[in-house]
Image 1 (cartoon, rainbow, N blue to C red):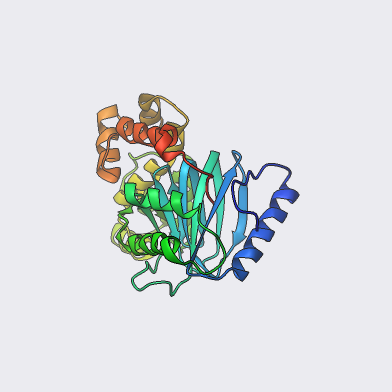
Image 2 (image 1 turned 90 degrees about the horizontal axis):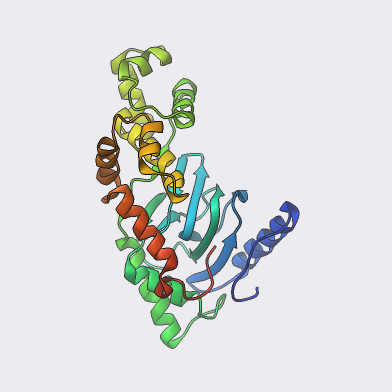
Amino acid sequence: MPHGREIFRGDAAELGRLHESRWQWLEEAVGPAVALPTEYPDGYHVPQHRHSRSQLLHALVGVVLVTTKHGRWMVPPDHAMWIPAGTEHSVEMLGDVSMRSVYVMPNAIAGLPEGLRVVGITELMHSLIVESEKLPQGGELEGRAALVMGLLLHEIPNLPERPLGLPFPSDAKLAALCRRFVAVPSPHATIDEWADAAGMSRRSFTRAFHRQTGLSLSTWRQQACLFAALPRLADGEPITRVALDLGYDSVPAFTTMFKRMLGASPRGYMRGARDAGENPRRAGGPLAA
């Protein structure tokens, strides 16, 4: 497979053939990990597929939506999605997306995450991903190259998990309510209203929802609102407009939720994401897939 920058632009059939070629190459590659760069155009959709390797999918610029049967996950700049080997998933690009992905053998080291998760990318990990993309790919590594990739692998278990997943319940009625909320988010509907819409008592509803998603309805709705807000903020929409459209009474209320979920205000968070894309130190080299 060619080493270096790949720009996936063209008709759907051509892009599909490029992906098939990549996946076949990955299956034949040796070594504990392989780092590959890709740039995708806005709106490009990678259909359901799986790898024999786990994937650390890192969005350097742009926002990525990863979908599995277990739910959806948002991957904004400065974050990555850990996708365990064998997990069927599809990927959608929200805006032009620059990625670096590292494909890891499941037994590469002990302690690799077992489940799907979105993680924050530390300064050290970012530097390691950028450097690993420059290494020889697809074969056994030696010397400095082996040390770089070895440190990268050992940093994966230490990456901080971020609450950017949106698991859906398995019950059809509950899932329909969740899809309706994602389409038109509103934090004001009460638990009783959700329970009535599902034809359940409040107690049965809260138990079923938590059992099937692992989250309370309140936490799930906050994550859904965050889910809806990130791509709009990334596109430069005013915070006030986004907050009011999502049903918040004020910007401070929205900011409080945002900061509790991501550890920074919307303005500070998006400023950091923009800096990640514009800072020459973070732009060295081809971008990932």
